[in-house]
Amino acid sequence: MIDPALFLRALFDRAVKVADPMRSLAGFLPPKPEGRVAVIGAGKASARMAEAVEAVWGPCEGLIITRYGYGRSCRGIEIVEAAHPVPDAAGEAATARMLDLLAGLGEGDFVLALISGGASALLCAPVAGVTLVDKQAVNAALLASGAPIDRMNVVRKHLSRVKGGQLAAAAYPARMLALMISDVPGDDPAFIGSGPTVGDGSTPAEARGILARWKIDVPEAVTAALAGPSGVIPPGDARLSRVENVIYAAPAQSLRAAAELAEARGCTVRLLGDALEGEARQVAAVQAAEALRLSVARKPGDPPILLLSGGELTVTRCGDGIGGPNAEFALALALALEGAEDIHAIACDTDGVDGAAEVAGAQIGPDTLRLARDRGVDPAQALARNDAHGFFGRIGRQVVTGPTLTNVNDFRAILIC
Image (cartoon, rainbow, N blue to C red; front, side):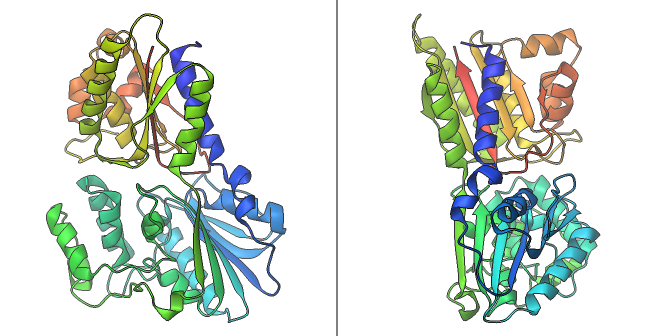
């Protein structure tokens, strides 16, 4: 077998490549409709999705909002870059323009919506009484709370004029096809980008309960907004009757592609799940225990074993470091493995951004803790400070990809060889 670190990186690269919209989107596009067609969307993969659409349909009218650094050159569709994971004025202004575009459409028109992870922050249209500054404070608090992504998105929906089906409702009576890349555990379209084209049955009271459950402090304007009625569109509303939502790429496909590559190289693959959630360091402890158990049971001459998993882990911030769920998983895994001789791992976000850092994730091996000692870095202290990116940066084990232009969430692989 090739070098374990190179092998694991090849598996991650394969998972990302399979989810590239230029490879996967065209098969889900219908022939370009007659009449007026508008292409809209948001997310870290949305500009690449728009590029893939124009490769088939030619130049189109439209507006896409993506993360800074994730823009692509399109011939007709306008690409706007804005902030993620905390929204900014550029995203707010672009969202207002998108709503203006939809307001001008009629029954004979067609909307293609391109939605991927990241749309929750990039589509920014606060409800009345809530400012951009308020939304920024809420997003930052949610991200630090450790709440699962589906719970975060319930709160976001009830503070927005576009989430929870409201973007689709704004386009009514035009016909809409929404193509989505899933980055959420369970692939529920209502939670991809906070479901701007999908009806939602949650309530403001449920959003208030989530804030209380995770002890999330919010501005007074947010509390007031959640005490009143919500604009979220319920399932079955007539304004959603002309919308079709299609998930065309999801984490399971990328994990399957990585598994096939590993099996071709002689590995025995065990899939631990494509929709794992939970605190990153706790999931790491569970997977470390399983890896150690398999390592002890493995006999000389047995094929290497690969443990694969996806989903979206969380971090409850209690320190002042720089980290993300994948790097924190990797650091906690290294500590739990205690330098086990035959175990290597990689943990990365397929969008190239782990948390708020421009780092996809990290790799570990039997020498990780020794490297840390040699360089005077305390791994336990780094974990306590949520400084996993700082830790791996100092020992040279970060995975930096730059913008991958897709997003099917976390990729974790543990190799026992």
